[in-house]
Picture 1 (cartoon, rainbow, N blue to C red):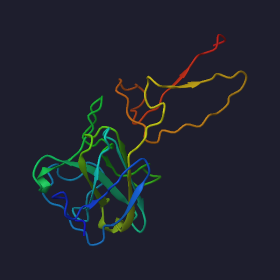
Picture 2: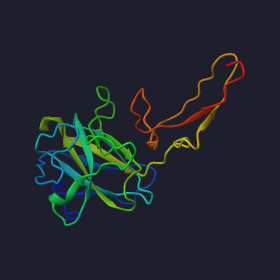
Picture 3: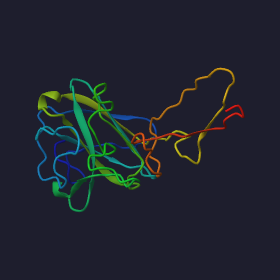
Length: 219
């Protein structure tokens, strides 16, 4: 089974040949056991029931991107985290990766540990990041949240995300003011990244996109 995260890696199921579209692998937490001695302890998101985790591995893109998407099959509530290694091949050298972004995230930042895509709506975990070390092997830990009875079979997809064209504040999408009325236009935040600017006072952004608009002379 894929229950031992190290060395590189007997047991951890490897993704190969990744690109901009999903590469899918099957997985199951049935019969899985705990991984003791991980340097950063229990994952920072999704209650860890002290047993039942399984491991995968994937190499980040040449620009440091990686996206992971878990879909439940018989499992009902899984969580996921990305780990890096800091040396030899033991669980003690595994560290849950945290993003080097501005502003500094809290210890349980969901970019590298995710329990639910949309809490209360979609409890399938999803991670998309552009802040990994390029061309580096990472390990992916998947476990049933809170109780092993939430585990079971699942599929996990890995790919190299392509940010939207208006992902950067220096390349915003131009909106056209119409008069009279409003013409809705559809956009997408899928695989967007964080911007290194001060956080807005009204919320905490995570993966933003940008627009610009010239206000008509009528205001």
